[in-house]
Length: 161
Image 1: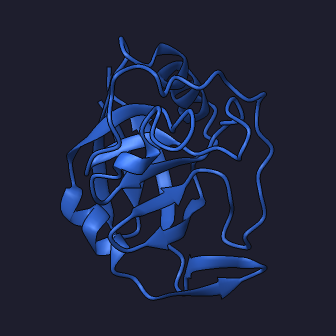
Image 2 (image 1 turned 45 degrees about the horizontal axis):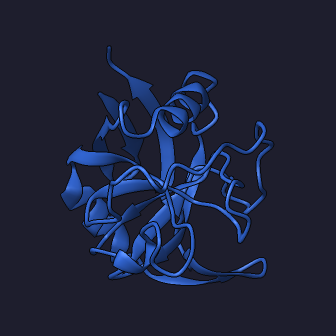
């Protein structure tokens, strides 16, 4: 069980180790390294998703490890409450950033419009916290859109074995 402790409350996460082993190991390593501690949910779009894991409160990107292979063809869908790896337009470009789907976002699934976005886990508790984050006021910041006006901070991410 993974716990994402935020300044809005805790989000419990179950990882799909068998369906997305590369993404899960990648996420676990970032947790073990303390990478997420002090980062923010820097992109919040109501009825779509909240994204975090790669920027600090000053909207500065943090250093990451090498990109991983995209596992979007694992059969998991971008449904409400699932976690998926964020990436650029390059299929195998995911590093530390992830997002939590607020709705069933079928267009992000494998074979929808492109290779898709790899789902690697699900919110097991704290979806009310995710929904609260989705309602924060957003604006533009440092060339980025949909940035919370008041930082939504990931205080720590922990693994309970």
